[in-house]
Length: 412
Image (cartoon, rainbow, N blue to C red; front, side, top):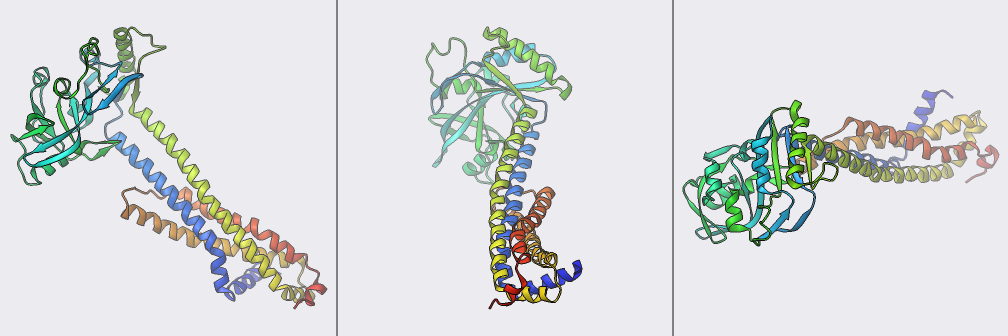
């Protein structure tokens, strides 16, 4: 029997049992759709994180302490191996940088008249923070070096904080707010920035860093003997070509200041590219895990195809005997049932692909998680569904081909 005749016969058999065929395909449909949706969510998350990191530019360096002693938040101090004096030394001694900044955070209640916002992140920083972090002023101005030195009681608001305290059409500049019990004057409001990595710039407020040390963080005089500790230092290199040189200069400077060696430093310097590579490695592993989890559904679908095809062989034993008696060979019988299984899995794969694409778009539209449909996931799903049909369809097809035609004809 020709291949085209086998395909027509298999198609006719599937149409004669529409409900059974649909139920048989259901496992493959769910498996293929799950693979596409899960991988699109993973890929979308990876793209969003990479874009968020890249917004700050590839020339940004992060200097963090290796060992932290104590805790931060509220009025508790965070003791680290980095101090504010390190920031001043980097600014004065390192070449080929556009700026250097720092932040030391604390969580405080912020109020204006009767409006109270609880647990707002207060960022103590320096004038270069705008440039280094890629922020813009929407209204007013940012503070200068003099304000930092004098611990002036002034504040810049993130856009969401300004809206919550003064309304979308309200005037924030010149108004007085309270952080805990300290009164400050608003001198600026930032442009809306949104999330960047794990930082929500719009829901923070910014003050001179010395004000944080003086008013919002309580530490002993002994703890401050080596200087005021900082959580992280940001260094912006002039361009990509000088990043390695800036890293070396900064490492040598801090090692000398901290009396440590480069082999065992008490600080770590990372770049945007380091973060992207780490993120890509993590999300790639996560995507593979999701693929395996969704692949289990495909295997379950394949088992379903095998079971239904075995039932079909049992029900159609007399038909098989009749076909053999009029000249059909075992190869013809094998081809017919194998093609039926393959058609079931391929049709299920096509429907699953359509549902997976639609589900990915719907997931991205109705949730906050972005999705990115990968062509590789569609091809992988389709090929997997075809392989499932061949692998799990072979056993029932082979059983049908090995039936004794005389025994088959006696079957009722």
